[in-house]
Image (tube, helix red, strand yellow):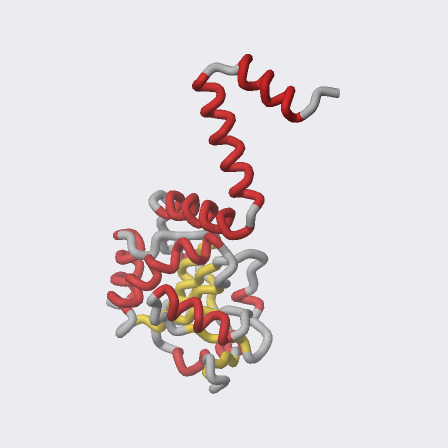
Length: 202
């Protein structure tokens, strides 16, 4: 069986300069994808590219989901444990996003959510929900310069907001209907997103 040194010599003698360069790049990418830290960076970068083509829209009237009273009875809590009741937001436009700091698509769309919050946060109720420890989330938000309102489930998540993956975002109209539901990273700072907010705020 050839030794590692012999294999390297054979590779060096039989591959062209361009083939060697391609092999090295492939090996570097392979190593980066195996190591957790760089893998997350690469995945986040890929998701940022996806954001440029994935824009939200309002569902047609027949596909909108009307929330019931029990959905609004959902109790959350802020980072200090103070209860927050979804029912307090009845008659408001709500942006409800489920996310986590370890989720690359979630992290990829946060800058766009932050910008949307800066534009519409005075009229739209932004709620970002995480199942992580508050200290972990708050450290992440501070490190990245976000001031988004994050909450934690205090009671079971209503069926209307159940999802098997994150990020998942719901936009709820003043009439209490889910008019947009998007799973995966979305560009919430796009003209398409602005049209949704502006139409719901009329």
